[in-house]
Image (cartoon, rainbow, N blue to C red; front, side, top):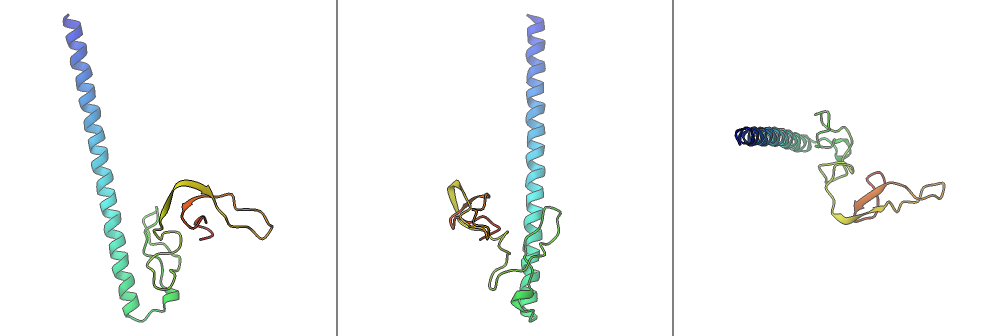
Length: 123
């Protein structure tokens, strides 16, 4: 009886510790995402300043932040803030094969959820 109580208490402590670890992990993830969002907002403001200062549209760079934490170096399409890779697009529910036909006559093998049916390389 006493050993069973000790076992129950130990299990509950372990469960509580696991919950606390998960909670700390979620808090760190939220903090990281907030920092990324703030960085991206700063990049959008910087991009707007570049537009106002007269930088040509074809020389503007994407406002997205890469996984390394630096600004994406790709050029944006005129009138957009992001390159074709980082631009938010409507997604399909299911993944399909890219519909682009290569110069050798074969279909691209990449999968996409993009409504255009093209992967991010060919969109």
